[in-house]
Image 1: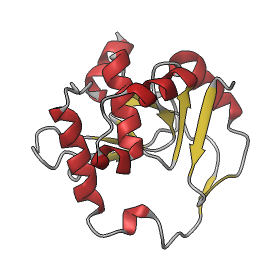
Image 2: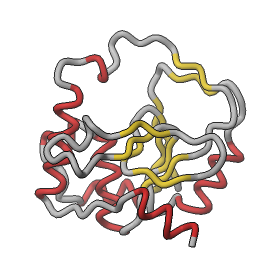
Image 3: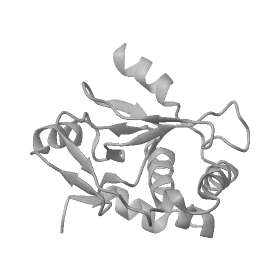
Image 4: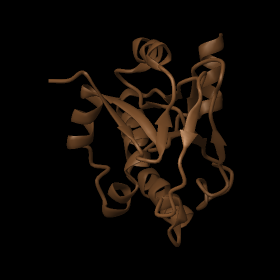
Length: 168
């Protein structure tokens, strides 16, 4: 059995060896948090459109917390996968937005944010005209997934609040 599972879109090429950064993040936060290169902080002040009016995130210097790790590249521990299997966060809209579901499920269980791994090497983003982000209503579906998770009892762990706690 594997300890960690890596998911990556087929339009991303990791041009260099990222293993040092990935292993550092796994050692620090991997068991109980979703890890990845691309994220989004939600805007909880904008009710019903928290995702749409959120902010895309990535980091180049240090591991940082984020509300959602985007599915472009993410890592989940075996414990996290097991939690996804038994989670009540399994409605159709959450299943359709599986990266949001993963971040939220682990946050709900372990009370820790998701984290972004520093991008210290080149990543090539290949053109992908069929990417989900180009589908009609993409952000609307993602907003619906966030609202559904809130309805099912997810209490957001603000990435900004978490960063302040980590620094102290």
